[in-house]
Image (tube, helix red, strand yellow):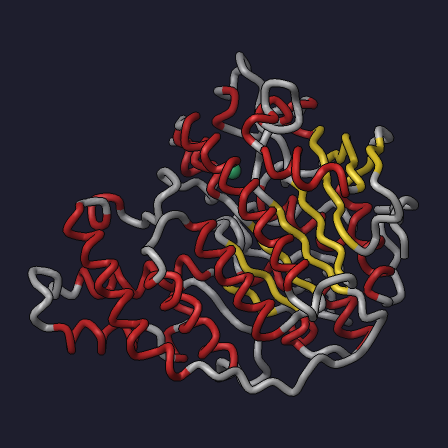
Length: 409
Ligand SMILES: [Zn+2]
């Protein structure tokens, strides 16, 4: 089954862990009610106590948005541009747009994102069981500039990622210099599914018990089991982080209920920006991976969602005084997908060694854009890390990738 090939696969754009459990209208009602319960208790608690930004480095901020596998056919092509109105109409005119950003490495999610984040083609386990072998941008930034962990974040809906995306296995760097890594969807789904399996769904009479269960599921000791992890020397969750996460999830549910994993990831990323103002934020969207189930319409709907959320993230940059005028935001797919008529089922997958899978694009917005331009010269995904390292003001490490000369540093 294709879903087994790609651990990022989702059965549609809904926030679905077990479709049988959650798709029925009564389950959705429950989910909404559960969210309201969470919101009522948790919103008043959220007060992030921050020591403020570390002040290290150039002061430049970087946001990288990766959106899973999308082909040029469905995006930056004459027939595809209708799927990405915000990228093509609102953002392209102000961007430095690389028409050909190539993935010449492994076209699987964990390796692709690891390569983008390290500047070297990574060939580790596709399922995220092994960390990248060379230092990530997070580690380079944090070690080089003595930056706090709260300055570097990954917020992801992609199930092919694990917390190992936040730091490499390099013994001179590693988790001590890694990023906060958050998978908000798994956290919320698990809390709700645990409550459902607890047999308390027949009616809402026992609200207190459900509430208690949801709260206990979100207690510190359970975080790792819920599919995400925050690195910490004491292996305990920073209360600032916990409050922010809980509040963001509660607000998200209260504001209309679950729609898609990427919506929640966006919501959480924006919350992290507002509460922690990190210098380096990576947002991994994956609604487009509905393609693995052969659902073309859901795949395209995922592209439209990514287009809109990337735009909304940019609007947040423009509206947030911590970010406005000093932020560079990058938007790029991890790779394309297989061509129609291929032996690997076309858009379902991303494993063919052809341009449809390897040749994609990259958009740069903000402070590093000297003048908007479309660059036809092919670049490589591994060129991004050394370029961003320099933007952030750290000493670039030896890497396979080369700095992109069009960026204004
Ligand atoms: Zn995939």
